[in-house]
Every structure is written in structure tokens, then in C-alpha cells.
Length: 417
Image 1: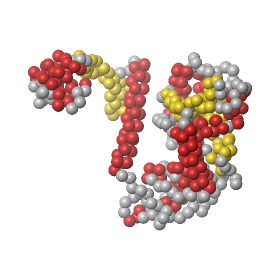
Image 2: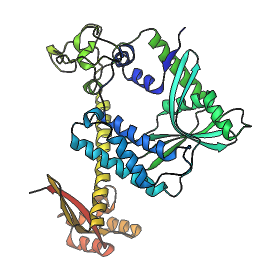
Image 3: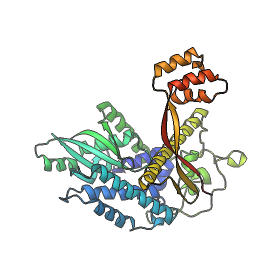
Image 4: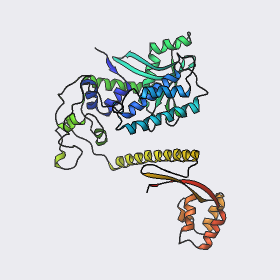
């Protein structure tokens, strides 16, 4: 039986949508360029350049930035997947910021790893496993640490990816030979830890190796996915958010009502066909899908709520980060106010009250019969009582006596006039 070419990314795509996997790896229709892939690839190239064990000396920050610029300029913004040259420029500036910050944190403590961007192929259980290990550090006694760079907005634990790395590294003759060059007495490898390094935030998340039980269950899942692929099980798994951003939705049976029979092969392009006549996610008679092809499960109210909470959380985290960066830059430049093309930012000095003695404050609220009004007595809820018309002036005076006035600078964003 011919070995099935397999990787973590292929498994991830199949689990996302078997039909999408079919378009990508059976029909061999490449996806359209994505700017976040180009951005991540460019920063991976820089990390490989910085840590390359073949180079005895580490490059300077200026050399790393120059390398990044050369790599970045080798393709157009369209080839990278950016919507405009301006957005590409912002991506480049963000890349420079990340590289400079990385050198600021690690520039004086760089150490050569065992390998960088090592491509490993392992034949096992009818699979030809392909993986690129961003960085391998040798810890001695046959123990290694695998580090994977992340460049997205957030980084989270991805157990399947970590366990795939562990499975490949501990069974790969290539990795064993690499370790034996550094330590000839080693007979077998043990992955001691696996880390994701989030380059935008310079945060490293380290995880313990998968247990024998975890690895067994993971491998059974891998073999199950492989069996489904061999069996030609490519039924679509539609969801509105997934389908909206999928490059193949115009030729997908979920929307067209028929199996794709167009051009295939790596030289082919995704056919430029008119948009589907119907939207299976739209309400009403026009939304009827082809029988036995489209059956998207409607989301429950708790699922919709959970998605909205996650989305708001991501927006809030991004806003907090941007506010901190804007305030820091304005402080560095000595600016109190600065303008963008549509909005202006202003640093505004404000005062706030701080109730440092929590015990005395709680006693005062209780004696004044105000404790119930605060629900949970936080700094802001207690301070809010001072502007509550239902609270007597005598009670407000007693609370003010317990408070200390603190000065702080807030960033305000308003539309530019």
C-alpha cells in the first residue's frame, strides 16, 4: 500500500472540512495567498537566519533587519496576499518592530540551537509524516526541547501539533543522528518539553511532553483521519464562518449542489466562476441546499454567546495592547496629542480615588448601610457612590475621608476634526 503523505497541517485541514482537504490535496488546487502566512514565513526566515548553527557569529540587529527587508521585498503585496501596498507597509513595520523587540530582550543571550527549520520525514504505520521543526535545543542526556514560533494575534495550546512533534522527533532517525553528532553516546531521544514562542508579544509558553496515554489516543486519532482520507470520505462540513473565508466556496458542492469536475493539479488555479446562486446559510426558501450535501447544524444560543465572548475578548486584548503602545510612543516623543488620518489621540491627566484601607472602608460602608449598593466593593464601585444622588452628603464625606487622590494619565481617542 502506498504511504499517505501526512502532516499536522493536513490533519488540521481535514478536521476543519474534509471537502476543503479534497480541493487542496486531491484536486491539488492551491489556496489564494494569505498575508498572515507571508508575514509568519518572513519572520520564520529571520529566526532561521539569526540562529543558524552554521554561522559562528550571530548577526547584529541591523543585519537581521536588512535580511528581513530583502526577503520582504522579494514579493509584491499581491503575492503576499495583502489588500494594498499600504497594508503591506504596515505589515513590514510590524515585522521590524518585532525583530527589534526580540533583540532587545534576547540579543545579549543568543545561543546556537541544535538545529533550525529542520525538515523531517518519518515513515510509520503506512504514513509518510512530514514536519518542519522550527528550533531544537539540546538539553543533554538525549533530551531535547522543541520550540515553534507563532506570529498570529494570539497563541494557545494546540495539543495535536505538540504531540505530532513529539511523535516525529522521538522516532526520527534524522533527529537521532543530529543529536548523536553532539552527543555520540545517545541511543534514544526524549522530548523533554515543547514550547510555542509568540513573537509579537515575546512570550514563551512551555508544555510538558505528552504522556503515554495521551500519545496513544492522539495516534489513534491520526490513524482514523488517515483511514478516512484513504476511503475517500470528503463530505463537506459547512459552517457560516468557515465557508465565508474559504477560497473554494464558489466551487463547493455545498453551494453549487454538484461535485466539482473542473481542472485539477498544482498548475491549475481555483476557477473564477460566478458566485453561487444560493447561500445555504441564508434564511428562506432560496437557502435550500442540495439533498444529502448540505446540512449545516444551526448553532445553539450558548454556542453563539461563547463565540461573541471570544470575539469581544480578542478585540479587547488588541485594544489594550494598542493603547499601551500608543501611550508609550507618545510619552517617548513627548507628545500630549497626535493625529492619525481619521482620529486623534490625547493623553489626559485625571485623578481617581483609591481606598487603600479595605477593612476600614468595608466597616464604613456597613455602618452607613451602603455595602449592598456596591454589590462587590471594588475601587470603582465605591467611588461611584460619591456621585450617587441617593447617598447623603454626610456619608460621602466619611467615604472621602478614607480615600486618597491618585493622578493617572488616560489615553482618549476621538475623531479628528
